[in-house]
Length: 563
Image (cartoon, one colour):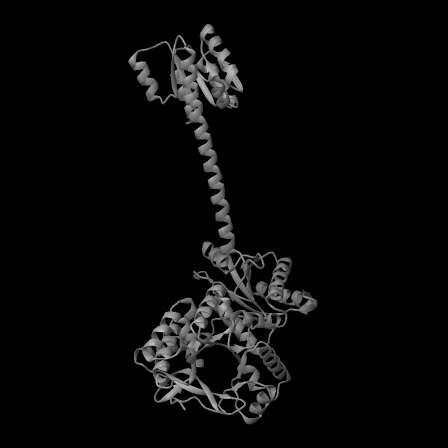
């Protein structure tokens, strides 16, 4: 006994097209189909069936083979051109092998012999319907999978190409847009927020992010040109078919509008200003001239902030490029011929006046004269040699302190060292080789070093800390310094930026900032170091403010010898 109820459950939401020119056979099959299917369409020949098929949504065709006007094979061919997956069951009184083979080659989904037996028809319909259901479920699964992949791809693109704080396209998207159609663009404006580090230091990073978001929105109100979020406190505007004069005009409009606007930061209302660098894009520029924009920005800031500068390929710029190239070559030679040596400068206990530790300073010795890293570190960074300098400094400093187990010494660490992920293993290797205790080694890092990849840099510092290394923040107070970030880093020392120490006797702001840093550090249990102490007056001031350690030419000039 066949389970009709099960078949009806499978077919009750489907439609079927019955095609047969014999009235008796057609009526017999129709009476069965109406009990099983939601919709039953009927045609007397292939041509009539094809017209119905074009107008209706048909899940299954049950057709006779021998009919006038258009036979079953012709109908099968025509419907499969419309829907290659169409399910078709054929009915025929023919039992000849060639007819059956032709039906098989036509990929029919069932073959019902006439006169029709109900069981045979039910079995053929069940097989075709189950196959159809599986195909529909597979199609639905594929569609859902494709939709999920498409959604995930869009989310990934959003994260890669758009800034999470401002919602603006980021620098990666800017470079992609430029490479896609570089001949379309004529000018680029680099905007850098003046004194943004003070907002971070005073109000915290959350407030700083809020300011960036507000600024991005306000820039979008001023101009409909292509605005991008750059590094840190930078924005960039890529201009389409602008002249130099028009770009300069837009920059001054932004300058005026921004200056007139007050931005809400916590409970305060702040005025924000920009320094801007403009670069004309040349036809042969294959990459965005970002470095040129930075040069223009740097040049104008030498004069004053809240100003606009334009980059020109002048003699001074060319000389700068030549000097950078020459210094990069000098660094390479220094590394190749072992001319990079550590010089040691004492760090003195402010209370006792005794030497407590030393900072290891990189110097290139040329004709017996030491050259400061101020001259060569930036060319080395651009040429990708900074990590090699760090490694060389670690190796030589460890060698020199191998027989001084009670003295601490500090080594400067750069963002490149964290990016290349060699630092932990290399330090451990050198400690073992030269019998240095990790507690002797102070690693001086810039506080904004983690801006490049916060989690990655912090995780490395946490591991170094767990291994016993001492962590010191260098140049604190410059750029994006923030005590919340310091607390997160769990550091041991803060070295106050020398820019505040050098003029502390003459500049009230420097005095206030230094005093504030020392106050917060003491409350957080962090020791402070004042560098660039160059005379007795400065020495007396920082001691009175309560700094823990002092460093500078007044106390000890850098020397090749320790002690």
